Image 1 (cartoon, helix red, strand yellow):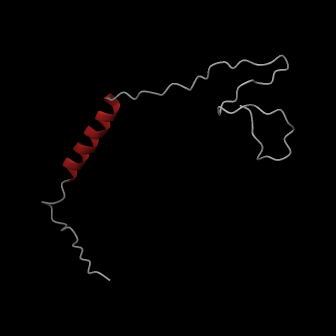
Image 2 (cartoon, one colour):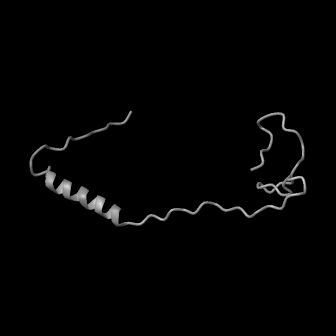
Image 3 (cartoon, rainbow, N blue to C red):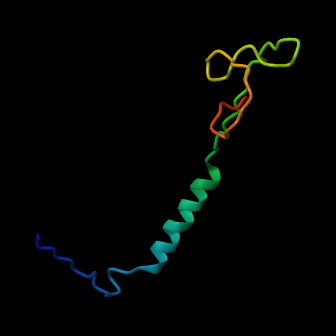
Length: 79
């Protein structure tokens, strides 16, 4: 196995300035509040033509529809 070394940071007052940490945190939250997040629009599928009996003529997966009885949960599901 390899050799690993780790040194603990000193706890002197020079290294730890709580005021600067709090200011940095406040700036971080201020930056987040100013930024605008674009919410993605939901996917809108084009209406699919259906036959007279309501069975779609085109599958969302691009395959040809198969009219059959589903016997297991693994059979193709129409959305």
